Amino acid sequence: MNKSNTIIWMCLLSLVVLTGALAYHAITSMQSLWGGPEHLPKDYFLSLIYWWSWLLVPLMAFAIWVLFTKTGWQRVLASLAFVPIFLLSYGRFIEPNLLFVERHQIPAPFAFKVALFSDLHVGLFSTRWQLNRLVDELNTLDVDEVWVAGDWTYLPPLDMHSAFAPLKKLKHPMYSVPGNHDAERPGPPVQKALRRVLNDFGVHHLENRVSEHDDFNLIGLSSAWAFQANYKLVESTDNGKPDIVLAHNPDVANLLPEQVFLTVTGHTHGGQVDLPWITQRVLNKMTMAGVEEGWYKTPSGTLFVTRGVGMVGLPVRFFNTPVVDVIEFSPNAQPPILQDALVPKGPFRGW
Image 1 (tube, one colour):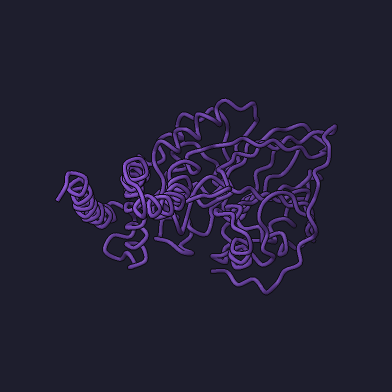
Image 2 (cartoon, rainbow, N blue to C red):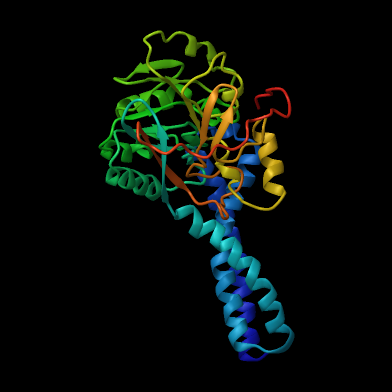
């Protein structure tokens, strides 16, 4: 056996050992997350995918080594393998760790700026660095408040207080609502613990509550998928101020009993992985009308959907970067271009 073949066999053996070590860590680390022994087989499978994805790093290095040191069929195979390995590596390690700020305007009878994000999903697929980076970015923005459109968690750590500790650095008032993963649809029973943690860090968590601001009413709805949202709350405000609904699921725009000034939501992740045809089929299952992101015209008024910052299902984002949306309300603002009115493709079905 020549030296080159020896190196190949040593690399393959190392990959086998690394695969086993990562599998052990993936399984044992689940005990530090909400759910404990009640974790579903799916949870362990997702943990394996997350940790085994680190194998992409040595596989990438091995493919590059073969490309530069081999010829013939070995180089051809390495070339064919390099492209999917590179794309998967980008979706796993690069794009999820990007963060963009996108700015929007909407005409309003008042002046106000808000930073909006959703779907943080602290837990299985997130890192503390990502939340720290998000808070640091929010602190650089010239906004009056920060709004969070739900889904704080995704199999979060048992020590949620430590996991959310970066929030104590936030310089802006923060208002939030729960998402379906915060209300066991699906997920562990974290709702009460999350409420306590957010309260400890000064977050105004609006679960079917109204926050009367100087120029508008901010109406926070609980999870629609958990059938906890009180849509009639929009009928309780009679102070003459514009109503803004903060919710997680964009389906609420089809369920409100009357028109509101604006509804802001998340939930869709913009598809998370943007692939022709496939992404839209996934979105059709996530919401009644298959909405993606951006501005929409709905029966209850204008709807804005943010694509969020986190991940569920698979630990990848592809052509769908994490984003914080800054919305400026102003009498002199240019109106946004609204996508066509939503036409629900089926009844509201929850989870």
